[in-house]
Image (cartoon, rainbow, N blue to C red; front, side, top):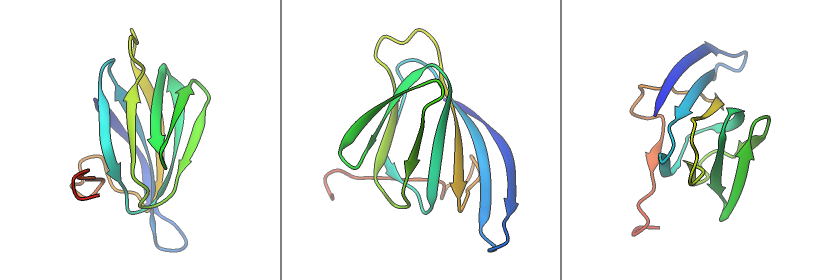
Length: 111
């Protein structure tokens, strides 16, 4: 998985706002995790899925999904995909791609 940071700033409320491009190669996934803030994913290329609130949502080009703050979710490519799954991730508050606090993995044994 690779990514590219987009615009980042402090909004009127003082919260960090930002947008990043995420590229997932076939066969990759973001394990179940959560974020401090709300975010929206918008698909640019390929197909993938997001598991949120117990439901797997299939995503393809032009689809978007809202993920509420601190809601466990996971993102994966589609089985058998031959190309990348590329999407924009917009978040408030935003954490840069290289920030250790960007996401927190969920330990299923503790859940």
